[in-house]
Image (cartoon, rainbow, N blue to C red; front, top):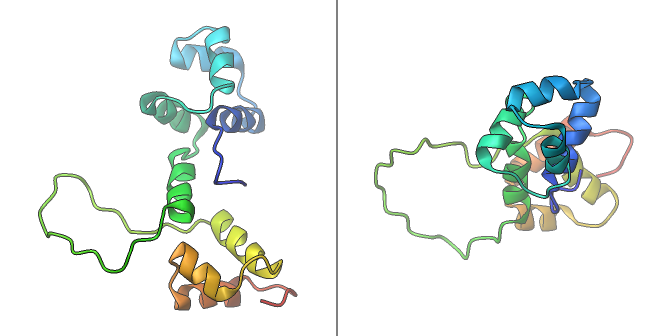
Length: 144
């Protein structure tokens, strides 16, 4: 899975194929024509409401793909940034959500020698203890 370039339409089409959902059901769910659904499969991005509907229909969190992109490719912060503690009406989420795909992606980088452990820790801002837990938990015959 390449989290750097997200072509959401293509990923939706793959999930539809995996789930074996008929186009007639999709058209009824969205109240769209077959042509409109086919156009969605070809788009790089979709409106959030449409993506939410796809997530519900296919029982898959497509927004998580974008969250993983942010975790992996957002620029690192320059030192400690002072934050003003104000109450927000928006919900607070955990800083990082590590999926199995993301863990595999990172461990593969280490395994292939593309990155060292320290480079992974620095670039992706993963705590050292977390990385070592992953290595211990998911180690195979590979030498991390």
